[in-house]
Length: 388
Image 1: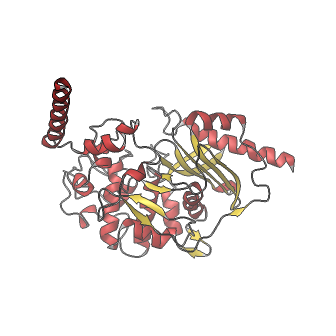
Image 2: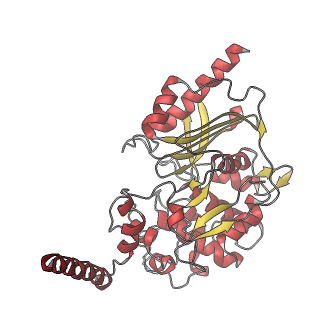
Image 3: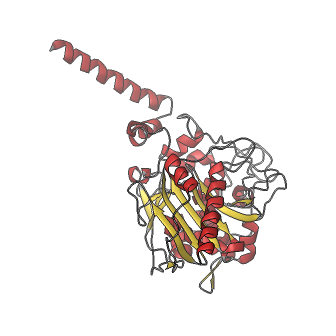
């Protein structure tokens, strides 16, 4: 008995010592990481981790349900697509053709109302919020300097970086995009409770506006600028100008760094569902117009889905682009394979949500599952045409 008492005493001392050391070395955010992610068996953020963090609601207005196609779900997923769903643990797959839901699959206990983490698909939404602020005259243009909002911004090139540089991933920010290291700046940003100070403690170390370099910190800084320019929480601004006018069927949640008055983790972390995420794709498919109302300037929408840099044709302003089998497309993308894919030529939107992403190589900026989702969708559509 004495041995057990002594044993647990030393365990307690060890754990307290570890906690003290995390504060001494300024890595106390790891305590939150351990509690919310690592102790649950994950090595990175996961689809339903929004339940472990404080959130701000993106309020819905009057719902506008999607139309359902007459031949809804008459064509099953192809064998390749079913195999991919199983291997990459897809939880939602949605095909919207001609503004109607044509195919819809939910797996692993999820359904059309289940909320899951958008991850970096939120970056497209932040750019949209910036575009709306410009449209309203609350921000001047893509060329507006970030120091107009944060004169304390540090680094050799701090006075040169613009909000357009942040949106197009040409910021020059001192940031490393490392998802699986517990000591990376990205991990700190995800779990720390003072995100604003983390971002403003970084330097602009490279000349901005020169080339594409994907950095989540750039989007976070952009969101902070939007919040200052509008005087509103990002969630409230997105609700008022997008979520409600687009008729989302469910409220969404945006993770905060702390409760109740923290800021949104804007580079990621909108919790919603496939049907409502698809609305962002529809808005861009229709050049910023929704039911006759111009929610976003059409010239701005075109700018977003046009590459800024010739050497990086895969990215514009907040949106990814590609061409597959002769079909030009643009898309929102998030960690672990979250996609909203838009193919304007065929009035087509594809949404995929799930636990794992396909193979990403250094030679192709697009993961291999993107090709599968597009190609197999077209096979399903071709099979449907044969049936008619």
